[in-house]
Image (cartoon, rainbow, N blue to C red; front, side, top):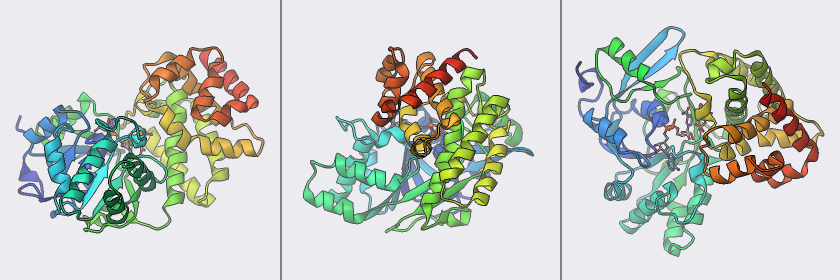
Length: 427
Ligand SMILES: NC(=O)c1ccc[n+]([C@@H]2O[C@H](COP(=O)([O-])OP(=O)(O)OC[C@H]3O[C@@H](n4cnc5c(N)ncnc54)[C@H](O)[C@@H]3O)[C@@H](O)[C@H]2O)c1
Ligand SMILES: O=P(O)(O)OC[C@@H](O)[C@@H](O)[C@H](O)[C@H](O)CO
């Protein structure tokens, strides 16, 4: 079977590289790279964090790959041609050359929530890599740049700015001033459910297009990108692909993190305890569905957007989650809980506790997390510490304290989570 080639794409040759991406995974390829296709003047140099396999496979395909959307009307397969070059994260020389090129106007990032914490040593971390690139750019002329984090974090632009300034605490005052004044930190809300690709996706491409793609991406038809911030050296015409540049990002960010990601987290931890493995299975389980609706009712009491907008969003989420075309594994979503629960569950839980209420769905999410830590192969930057706590006496008390110390002082909450855990453990 022939390989993918440019006969079915808009770009006869790779577009000039004006954007860099760090964290070349499924989501970047289903989201930012697809939005960038609209503008033939903009090509992307995309870097993995560590993997050497994906860049090699993409390079063998001239950077081309397919995105397949699974909606009600079956799969649709599209060739994406905006990645002009793909590199392994270990290619440091090329990274420094790209970051210091005055032609480079922006850097997008999908480096996971956990990567925004400054850890020492910085070497080998995403922040360390970014800092090294920015220092090289400053040293070689200091052209301005926009940084565009696309991870599910509240205030992701501001978080990245604070993290980089903290990471650069030993850098020269000149560099720190340049970083503050000439690097723009763009806030974003990103949304497109994109699970890890399975082998079935390869067969779909072969059947639909008659070509072999080694690295297809599977995603949903829905896609959203909201941005707020400056692009001092320009940007692709993303708005022509549906991106929206807005001033009032915060309420939409809250809606996305609480309603979509919060429900995902709730189901990711309670679902396996009730025998489910994917989101579409979980939303068909009556008990899990009831918790999800209860979570949304609770979150609605504290959300900023008007009720009718939230109800509309909930309706769309029900459809998106129930889609059988997207087999989104609960265990994929369950990774890095210590980094996700604070943004997705705790704000609503705290608001409820301040009113003297005990939100059953948030309690279920925390109880499910405790079970996850006791029973699964845990992927979390604090995995060692958390699994030890999960097997200790008073595991719930210690784990809630690890999430946020004041939670452990709330004895009523600790008891409620313990009771739900015991209930879930017995099925
Ligand atoms: N998949 C989605 O539905 C989705 C939707 C919205 C946002 N996101 C964001 O994108 C991120 C990546 O998702 P994905 O689906 O591409 O996952 P993926 O597993 O396909 O790729 C993850 C990418 O992140 C890199 N990475 C992993 N750990 C890292 C670390 N400690 N430091 C730096 N980079 C690291 C990996 O090398 C890889 O390039 C998520 O963590 C999330 O913040 C994903
Ligand atoms: O990608 P993560 O690991 O931050 O979270 C897992 C899912 O909740 C997330 O990927 C959603 O599918 C996504 O945020 C939808 O836009």
